[in-house]
Length: 459
Image 1 (cartoon, one colour):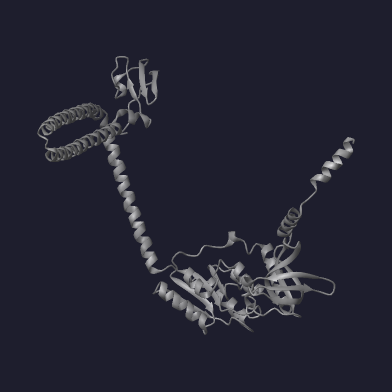
Image 2 (cartoon, rainbow, N blue to C red):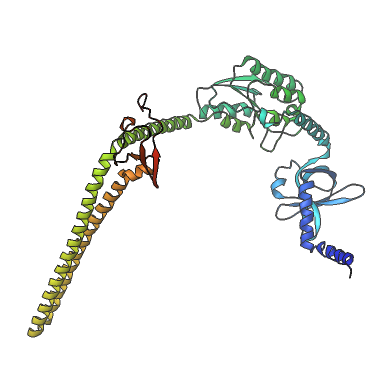
Protein backbone atom coordinates (compact mmCIF):
# COMPACT_ATOMS: atom_id res chain seq x y z
CA UNK A 1 0.00 0.00 0.00
CA UNK A 2 1.54 3.33 -1.06
CA UNK A 3 1.33 6.59 0.97
CA UNK A 4 -1.63 7.86 -1.03
CA UNK A 5 -3.73 4.76 -0.32
CA UNK A 6 -2.74 4.83 3.36
CA UNK A 7 -3.81 8.48 3.70
CA UNK A 8 -7.18 7.69 2.09
CA UNK A 9 -7.75 4.75 4.45
CA UNK A 10 -6.96 6.84 7.55
CA UNK A 11 -9.22 9.65 6.38
CA UNK A 12 -12.09 7.23 5.74
CA UNK A 13 -11.67 5.73 9.21
CA UNK A 14 -11.81 9.17 10.85
CA UNK A 15 -15.17 9.99 9.18
CA UNK A 16 -16.97 6.96 10.59
CA UNK A 17 -19.71 7.94 13.07
CA UNK A 18 -21.70 5.74 15.36
CA UNK A 19 -25.45 6.40 15.23
CA UNK A 20 -25.52 8.32 18.51
CA UNK A 21 -22.60 10.53 17.43
CA UNK A 22 -24.31 11.32 14.14
CA UNK A 23 -27.58 12.25 15.83
CA UNK A 24 -25.70 14.43 18.32
CA UNK A 25 -23.86 16.17 15.47
CA UNK A 26 -27.14 16.86 13.68
CA UNK A 27 -28.62 18.18 16.92
CA UNK A 28 -25.77 20.68 17.25
CA UNK A 29 -26.43 21.88 13.72
CA UNK A 30 -30.14 22.29 14.46
CA UNK A 31 -29.38 24.18 17.68
CA UNK A 32 -27.17 26.68 15.88
CA UNK A 33 -29.16 27.10 12.65
CA UNK A 34 -32.83 26.36 13.38
CA UNK A 35 -33.75 28.17 16.62
CA UNK A 36 -37.08 30.05 16.94
CA UNK A 37 -38.08 29.31 13.37
CA UNK A 38 -41.65 29.85 12.10
CA UNK A 39 -43.33 27.15 10.04
CA UNK A 40 -46.69 27.52 8.27
CA UNK A 41 -48.76 24.44 7.55
CA UNK A 42 -51.88 22.41 8.20
CA UNK A 43 -52.24 20.28 11.32
CA UNK A 44 -52.58 16.59 10.52
CA UNK A 45 -52.82 13.46 12.68
CA UNK A 46 -53.18 15.43 15.90
CA UNK A 47 -53.41 13.41 19.12
CA UNK A 48 -53.22 14.32 22.81
CA UNK A 49 -51.26 12.04 25.13
CA UNK A 50 -52.25 11.33 28.72
CA UNK A 51 -49.40 13.63 29.76
CA UNK A 52 -51.10 16.60 28.07
CA UNK A 53 -48.57 16.82 25.21
CA UNK A 54 -49.81 17.29 21.62
CA UNK A 55 -48.29 15.24 18.78
CA UNK A 56 -49.12 16.11 15.17
CA UNK A 57 -47.65 16.83 11.75
CA UNK A 58 -47.50 20.08 9.81
CA UNK A 59 -48.05 19.51 6.11
CA UNK A 60 -48.43 21.38 2.87
CA UNK A 61 -49.10 20.15 -0.66
CA UNK A 62 -45.79 18.34 -1.05
CA UNK A 63 -44.38 17.28 2.34
CA UNK A 64 -44.81 17.21 6.09
CA UNK A 65 -42.81 17.48 9.32
CA UNK A 66 -43.50 16.00 12.73
CA UNK A 67 -44.19 18.41 15.57
CA UNK A 68 -44.59 18.26 19.35
CA UNK A 69 -46.39 20.81 21.54
CA UNK A 70 -45.55 20.08 25.16
CA UNK A 71 -48.04 20.66 27.95
CA UNK A 72 -46.12 23.61 29.41
CA UNK A 73 -46.33 25.52 26.12
CA UNK A 74 -49.87 24.35 25.33
CA UNK A 75 -51.17 26.30 28.35
CA UNK A 76 -50.50 29.57 26.51
CA UNK A 77 -52.19 28.59 23.24
CA UNK A 78 -55.57 30.33 22.91
CA UNK A 79 -57.13 27.51 20.86
CA UNK A 80 -57.09 23.73 20.87
CA UNK A 81 -54.97 22.19 18.08
CA UNK A 82 -56.97 19.90 15.79
CA UNK A 83 -56.73 18.39 12.32
CA UNK A 84 -57.31 20.70 9.39
CA UNK A 85 -56.34 23.97 11.07
CA UNK A 86 -53.96 26.20 9.09
CA UNK A 87 -51.46 27.49 11.62
CA UNK A 88 -48.10 29.16 12.02
CA UNK A 89 -45.88 27.34 14.53
CA UNK A 90 -42.83 28.86 16.18
CA UNK A 91 -40.24 26.60 17.76
CA UNK A 92 -36.90 24.83 17.54
CA UNK A 93 -35.87 21.99 15.27
CA UNK A 94 -34.45 19.04 17.23
CA UNK A 95 -33.43 15.43 16.70
CA UNK A 96 -35.45 12.72 18.44
CA UNK A 97 -32.48 10.40 18.93
CA UNK A 98 -34.48 7.37 20.00
CA UNK A 99 -35.86 6.99 16.45
CA UNK A 100 -33.35 9.06 14.52
CA UNK A 101 -36.07 11.51 13.41
CA UNK A 102 -36.11 15.27 13.44
CA UNK A 103 -39.14 17.16 14.69
CA UNK A 104 -40.30 20.68 15.47
CA UNK A 105 -40.62 21.45 19.19
CA UNK A 106 -43.45 23.98 19.12
CA UNK A 107 -43.31 26.86 21.61
CA UNK A 108 -46.10 29.04 20.16
CA UNK A 109 -48.97 28.31 17.82
CA UNK A 110 -51.35 30.72 16.12
CA UNK A 111 -53.97 30.51 13.44
CA UNK A 112 -52.66 31.44 10.05
CA UNK A 113 -55.23 34.21 9.81
CA UNK A 114 -53.17 36.16 12.34
CA UNK A 115 -50.02 35.58 10.30
CA UNK A 116 -50.34 38.93 8.50
CA UNK A 117 -50.28 40.82 11.78
CA UNK A 118 -47.41 38.70 13.01
CA UNK A 119 -45.46 39.40 9.84
CA UNK A 120 -46.04 43.13 10.28
CA UNK A 121 -44.91 42.78 13.89
CA UNK A 122 -41.68 41.04 12.86
CA UNK A 123 -40.98 43.55 10.09
CA UNK A 124 -41.40 46.56 12.40
CA UNK A 125 -39.37 44.83 15.09
CA UNK A 126 -36.53 44.24 12.61
CA UNK A 127 -36.69 47.86 11.40
CA UNK A 128 -36.59 49.43 14.87
CA UNK A 129 -33.88 47.01 15.97
CA UNK A 130 -31.70 48.16 13.10
CA UNK A 131 -32.27 51.79 14.18
CA UNK A 132 -31.11 50.95 17.72
CA UNK A 133 -34.42 51.71 19.46
CA UNK A 134 -34.27 48.41 21.34
CA UNK A 135 -30.69 48.85 22.56
CA UNK A 136 -30.22 48.56 26.30
CA UNK A 137 -27.69 51.40 26.22
CA UNK A 138 -30.39 53.98 25.41
CA UNK A 139 -32.76 52.88 28.15
CA UNK A 140 -32.83 54.88 31.36
CA UNK A 141 -32.88 53.60 34.90
CA UNK A 142 -36.13 54.09 36.79
CA UNK A 143 -36.06 56.70 39.58
CA UNK A 144 -35.45 55.13 42.97
CA UNK A 145 -38.19 57.08 44.76
CA UNK A 146 -40.58 58.81 42.35
CA UNK A 147 -42.97 61.23 44.00
CA UNK A 148 -45.11 61.88 40.92
CA UNK A 149 -46.27 58.97 38.73
CA UNK A 150 -48.11 59.33 35.45
CA UNK A 151 -50.60 56.69 34.28
CA UNK A 152 -51.67 56.16 30.68
CA UNK A 153 -54.53 53.68 30.49
CA UNK A 154 -58.28 53.37 30.29
CA UNK A 155 -60.07 55.11 33.20
CA UNK A 156 -62.43 52.14 33.47
CA UNK A 157 -61.76 48.48 34.08
CA UNK A 158 -59.63 46.46 36.43
CA UNK A 159 -56.22 47.77 35.33
CA UNK A 160 -56.49 51.25 36.87
CA UNK A 161 -58.02 49.83 40.06
CA UNK A 162 -55.25 47.24 40.43
CA UNK A 163 -52.47 49.79 39.91
CA UNK A 164 -53.92 52.31 42.36
CA UNK A 165 -54.52 49.59 44.95
CA UNK A 166 -50.92 48.35 44.76
CA UNK A 167 -49.43 51.88 44.86
CA UNK A 168 -51.53 52.87 47.86
CA UNK A 169 -50.62 49.68 49.70
CA UNK A 170 -46.88 49.98 49.05
CA UNK A 171 -46.39 53.72 49.53
CA UNK A 172 -49.41 55.85 50.51
CA UNK A 173 -49.27 59.55 49.70
CA UNK A 174 -47.79 59.45 46.18
CA UNK A 175 -48.92 62.00 43.58
CA UNK A 176 -50.59 60.09 40.75
CA UNK A 177 -51.99 61.70 37.59
CA UNK A 178 -54.10 59.69 35.13
CA UNK A 179 -54.21 60.67 31.48
CA UNK A 180 -57.26 58.70 30.28
CA UNK A 181 -56.70 57.04 26.94
CA UNK A 182 -58.48 54.49 24.81
CA UNK A 183 -56.25 51.39 24.63
CA UNK A 184 -57.96 49.58 21.72
CA UNK A 185 -59.77 50.40 18.53
CA UNK A 186 -60.20 53.58 16.53
CA UNK A 187 -58.64 56.66 18.09
CA UNK A 188 -56.51 54.71 20.56
CA UNK A 189 -53.24 55.50 18.75
CA UNK A 190 -53.84 59.27 18.86
CA UNK A 191 -54.88 59.25 22.51
CA UNK A 192 -51.94 57.18 23.71
CA UNK A 193 -49.42 59.28 21.77
CA UNK A 194 -51.02 62.46 23.13
CA UNK A 195 -50.78 61.13 26.69
CA UNK A 196 -47.11 60.13 26.40
CA UNK A 197 -46.24 63.48 24.78
CA UNK A 198 -48.09 65.34 27.56
CA UNK A 199 -45.98 63.82 30.31
CA UNK A 200 -42.84 64.19 28.20
CA UNK A 201 -43.37 67.90 27.51
CA UNK A 202 -44.67 69.01 30.91
CA UNK A 203 -42.09 67.04 32.90
CA UNK A 204 -44.60 66.69 35.74
CA UNK A 205 -44.14 62.95 36.19
CA UNK A 206 -40.92 61.29 37.33
CA UNK A 207 -41.99 58.06 35.60
CA UNK A 208 -44.90 56.99 33.35
CA UNK A 209 -46.74 53.65 33.37
CA UNK A 210 -48.33 52.65 30.05
CA UNK A 211 -50.79 49.86 30.86
CA UNK A 212 -53.69 47.77 29.64
CA UNK A 213 -55.09 44.29 30.27
CA UNK A 214 -54.51 41.16 28.23
CA UNK A 215 -56.04 40.25 24.91
CA UNK A 216 -55.43 38.77 21.49
CA UNK A 217 -52.85 40.00 19.02
CA UNK A 218 -55.56 42.14 17.40
CA UNK A 219 -56.62 43.57 20.77
CA UNK A 220 -53.06 44.63 21.60
CA UNK A 221 -52.20 45.89 18.13
CA UNK A 222 -52.30 49.57 19.11
CA UNK A 223 -49.09 48.97 21.07
CA UNK A 224 -47.46 47.44 17.97
CA UNK A 225 -47.96 50.58 15.87
CA UNK A 226 -44.79 52.36 14.75
CA UNK A 227 -46.09 55.79 15.79
CA UNK A 228 -46.81 54.65 19.33
CA UNK A 229 -43.44 52.91 19.57
CA UNK A 230 -41.54 56.01 18.44
CA UNK A 231 -43.49 58.23 20.84
CA UNK A 232 -42.55 55.96 23.74
CA UNK A 233 -38.92 55.85 22.60
CA UNK A 234 -38.75 59.67 22.34
CA UNK A 235 -40.28 60.31 25.75
CA UNK A 236 -38.14 62.49 28.00
CA UNK A 237 -39.59 60.68 31.02
CA UNK A 238 -38.80 56.99 31.71
CA UNK A 239 -41.67 54.77 30.55
CA UNK A 240 -42.72 51.40 32.00
CA UNK A 241 -44.57 49.17 29.53
CA UNK A 242 -47.19 47.00 31.27
CA UNK A 243 -49.20 45.58 28.38
CA UNK A 244 -51.31 42.44 28.77
CA UNK A 245 -50.23 39.29 30.52
CA UNK A 246 -46.72 37.95 31.02
CA UNK A 247 -46.83 35.97 27.76
CA UNK A 248 -47.98 38.95 25.68
CA UNK A 249 -45.18 40.81 23.89
CA UNK A 250 -45.58 44.12 22.04
CA UNK A 251 -43.25 46.53 20.26
CA UNK A 252 -43.75 48.98 23.13
CA UNK A 253 -42.20 46.42 25.48
CA UNK A 254 -38.97 46.60 23.48
CA UNK A 255 -38.71 50.41 23.22
CA UNK A 256 -39.82 51.23 26.77
CA UNK A 257 -37.22 51.80 29.47
CA UNK A 258 -38.63 48.87 31.47
CA UNK A 259 -41.07 46.07 30.70
CA UNK A 260 -43.37 44.80 33.46
CA UNK A 261 -45.11 41.44 32.94
CA UNK A 262 -48.45 42.80 34.17
CA UNK A 263 -49.91 46.20 35.20
CA UNK A 264 -49.87 45.15 38.87
CA UNK A 265 -46.22 44.15 38.53
CA UNK A 266 -45.49 47.64 37.13
CA UNK A 267 -46.94 49.16 40.29
CA UNK A 268 -44.75 46.82 42.36
CA UNK A 269 -41.64 47.83 40.43
CA UNK A 270 -42.13 51.58 40.22
CA UNK A 271 -41.94 52.23 43.97
CA UNK A 272 -40.55 50.41 46.96
CA UNK A 273 -42.59 49.89 50.11
CA UNK A 274 -42.43 52.51 52.83
CA UNK A 275 -41.19 49.83 55.23
CA UNK A 276 -38.30 48.82 52.97
CA UNK A 277 -37.29 52.47 52.60
CA UNK A 278 -37.22 52.92 56.37
CA UNK A 279 -35.20 49.70 56.69
CA UNK A 280 -32.65 50.97 54.13
CA UNK A 281 -32.38 54.28 55.99
CA UNK A 282 -31.81 52.45 59.26
CA UNK A 283 -29.20 50.24 57.62
CA UNK A 284 -27.43 53.30 56.17
CA UNK A 285 -27.40 54.94 59.60
CA UNK A 286 -25.94 51.79 61.12
CA UNK A 287 -23.24 51.60 58.45
CA UNK A 288 -22.37 55.25 59.07
CA UNK A 289 -22.05 54.65 62.81
CA UNK A 290 -19.87 51.61 62.19
CA UNK A 291 -17.66 53.66 59.89
CA UNK A 292 -17.27 56.38 62.52
CA UNK A 293 -16.42 53.82 65.19
CA UNK A 294 -13.87 52.22 62.89
CA UNK A 295 -12.20 55.55 62.16
CA UNK A 296 -12.05 56.37 65.86
CA UNK A 297 -10.51 53.00 66.64
CA UNK A 298 -7.90 53.50 63.91
CA UNK A 299 -7.04 56.97 65.22
CA UNK A 300 -6.74 55.63 68.76
CA UNK A 301 -4.54 52.78 67.56
CA UNK A 302 -2.27 55.12 65.58
CA UNK A 303 -1.96 57.46 68.56
CA UNK A 304 -1.14 54.54 70.80
CA UNK A 305 1.47 53.12 68.45
CA UNK A 306 3.43 56.40 68.35
CA UNK A 307 4.48 55.94 71.97
CA UNK A 308 4.87 52.20 72.15
CA UNK A 309 8.55 51.79 71.22
CA UNK A 310 9.93 52.41 74.71
CA UNK A 311 6.86 51.03 76.40
CA UNK A 312 7.10 47.94 74.22
CA UNK A 313 10.63 47.22 75.44
CA UNK A 314 9.61 47.60 79.08
CA UNK A 315 6.50 45.54 78.52
CA UNK A 316 8.52 42.85 76.78
CA UNK A 317 10.83 42.57 79.81
CA UNK A 318 7.91 42.55 82.22
CA UNK A 319 6.09 39.90 80.24
CA UNK A 320 9.24 37.82 80.00
CA UNK A 321 9.65 37.87 83.77
CA UNK A 322 6.00 37.00 84.25
CA UNK A 323 6.27 34.19 81.73
CA UNK A 324 9.27 32.87 83.64
CA UNK A 325 7.29 33.10 86.88
CA UNK A 326 4.48 31.14 85.25
CA UNK A 327 6.95 28.43 84.26
CA UNK A 328 8.29 28.30 87.83
CA UNK A 329 4.80 28.07 89.28
CA UNK A 330 3.91 25.32 86.83
CA UNK A 331 7.07 23.38 87.77
CA UNK A 332 6.42 23.87 91.51
CA UNK A 333 2.83 22.75 91.09
CA UNK A 334 3.94 19.60 89.31
CA UNK A 335 6.51 18.90 92.03
CA UNK A 336 3.92 19.45 94.75
CA UNK A 337 1.53 17.15 92.91
CA UNK A 338 4.22 14.48 92.63
CA UNK A 339 5.10 14.77 96.32
CA UNK A 340 1.46 14.64 97.31
CA UNK A 341 0.83 11.60 95.14
CA UNK A 342 3.96 9.92 96.51
CA UNK A 343 2.91 10.65 100.08
CA UNK A 344 -0.58 9.38 99.44
CA UNK A 345 0.79 6.31 97.77
CA UNK A 346 3.09 5.63 100.74
CA UNK A 347 0.22 6.15 103.14
CA UNK A 348 -1.94 3.82 101.07
CA UNK A 349 0.78 1.18 101.18
CA UNK A 350 1.02 1.54 104.95
CA UNK A 351 -2.71 1.24 105.34
CA UNK A 352 -2.70 -1.80 103.11
CA UNK A 353 -0.08 -3.43 105.27
CA UNK A 354 -2.00 -2.62 108.48
CA UNK A 355 -5.25 -3.84 107.02
CA UNK A 356 -3.65 -7.01 105.79
CA UNK A 357 -2.17 -7.54 109.26
CA UNK A 358 -5.56 -7.04 110.89
CA UNK A 359 -7.50 -8.76 108.06
CA UNK A 360 -9.86 -5.78 107.79
CA UNK A 361 -10.85 -6.05 104.10
CA UNK A 362 -13.95 -3.90 104.36
CA UNK A 363 -12.14 -1.00 106.01
CA UNK A 364 -9.34 -1.30 103.48
CA UNK A 365 -11.75 -1.03 100.56
CA UNK A 366 -13.38 2.04 102.07
CA UNK A 367 -10.03 3.68 102.76
CA UNK A 368 -8.90 2.98 99.18
CA UNK A 369 -12.03 4.56 97.77
CA UNK A 370 -11.57 7.71 99.83
CA UNK A 371 -7.95 7.92 98.78
CA UNK A 372 -8.80 7.60 95.08
CA UNK A 373 -11.45 10.29 95.45
CA UNK A 374 -8.93 12.61 97.11
CA UNK A 375 -6.46 11.93 94.33
CA UNK A 376 -9.06 12.81 91.68
CA UNK A 377 -10.05 16.02 93.43
CA UNK A 378 -6.43 17.02 93.90
CA UNK A 379 -5.59 16.18 90.29
CA UNK A 380 -8.51 18.22 88.99
CA UNK A 381 -7.48 21.20 91.09
CA UNK A 382 -3.88 20.98 89.97
CA UNK A 383 -4.98 20.57 86.31
CA UNK A 384 -7.28 23.60 86.61
CA UNK A 385 -4.50 25.67 88.16
CA UNK A 386 -2.03 24.63 85.47
CA UNK A 387 -4.56 25.41 82.71
CA UNK A 388 -5.24 28.84 84.16
CA UNK A 389 -1.54 29.59 84.41
CA UNK A 390 -0.94 28.33 80.87
CA UNK A 391 -3.74 30.49 79.46
CA UNK A 392 -2.33 33.49 81.30
CA UNK A 393 1.06 32.74 79.83
CA UNK A 394 -0.41 32.47 76.30
CA UNK A 395 -2.34 35.74 76.75
CA UNK A 396 0.80 37.54 77.90
CA UNK A 397 2.74 36.09 75.00
CA UNK A 398 0.11 37.28 72.47
CA UNK A 399 0.11 40.73 74.06
CA UNK A 400 3.88 40.82 73.91
CA UNK A 401 3.87 39.96 70.21
CA UNK A 402 1.26 42.63 69.47
CA UNK A 403 3.27 45.45 71.00
CA UNK A 404 6.70 44.10 70.03
CA UNK A 405 8.86 46.52 68.01
CA UNK A 406 9.55 43.63 65.64
CA UNK A 407 5.85 43.65 64.75
CA UNK A 408 6.09 47.35 63.93
CA UNK A 409 9.07 46.60 61.66
CA UNK A 410 6.97 44.04 59.73
CA UNK A 411 4.61 46.86 58.69
CA UNK A 412 7.39 48.70 56.87
CA UNK A 413 8.99 50.79 59.64
CA UNK A 414 12.74 50.79 60.41
CA UNK A 415 15.14 51.53 63.32
CA UNK A 416 18.12 53.74 62.41
CA UNK A 417 21.29 53.70 64.58
CA UNK A 418 24.64 55.48 64.25
CA UNK A 419 28.00 53.75 64.54
CA UNK A 420 27.82 54.04 68.34
CA UNK A 421 24.57 52.07 68.38
CA UNK A 422 22.39 55.04 69.37
CA UNK A 423 18.86 55.18 67.93
CA UNK A 424 18.32 58.31 65.81
CA UNK A 425 15.06 60.23 66.30
CA UNK A 426 15.77 63.34 64.24
CA UNK A 427 18.07 64.61 61.48
CA UNK A 428 19.94 66.85 63.92
CA UNK A 429 21.45 63.76 65.58
CA UNK A 430 23.60 62.89 62.52
CA UNK A 431 25.69 64.61 59.87
CA UNK A 432 26.52 64.37 56.21
CA UNK A 433 28.66 61.37 55.35
CA UNK A 434 27.89 59.55 58.59
CA UNK A 435 27.52 55.78 58.43
CA UNK A 436 24.15 54.46 59.61
CA UNK A 437 22.78 51.02 60.40
CA UNK A 438 19.12 50.54 59.31
CA UNK A 439 17.26 47.67 60.99
CA UNK A 440 14.44 46.25 58.78
CA UNK A 441 11.99 43.45 59.34
CA UNK A 442 14.12 40.81 57.56
CA UNK A 443 17.64 42.14 58.04
CA UNK A 444 19.83 45.24 58.21
CA UNK A 445 21.13 47.76 55.71
CA UNK A 446 24.31 49.85 56.00
CA UNK A 447 23.71 53.40 54.69
CA UNK A 448 25.53 56.72 54.44
CA UNK A 449 23.92 60.16 54.96
CA UNK A 450 23.72 62.06 51.66
CA UNK A 451 21.42 64.85 52.77
CA UNK A 452 19.82 66.14 55.98
CA UNK A 453 16.52 68.00 56.02
CA UNK A 454 14.35 68.65 59.09
CA UNK A 455 10.55 68.39 58.94
CA UNK A 456 8.88 71.56 57.67
CA UNK A 457 5.73 71.05 59.70
CA UNK A 458 3.83 68.48 61.70
CA UNK A 459 4.07 64.91 60.35
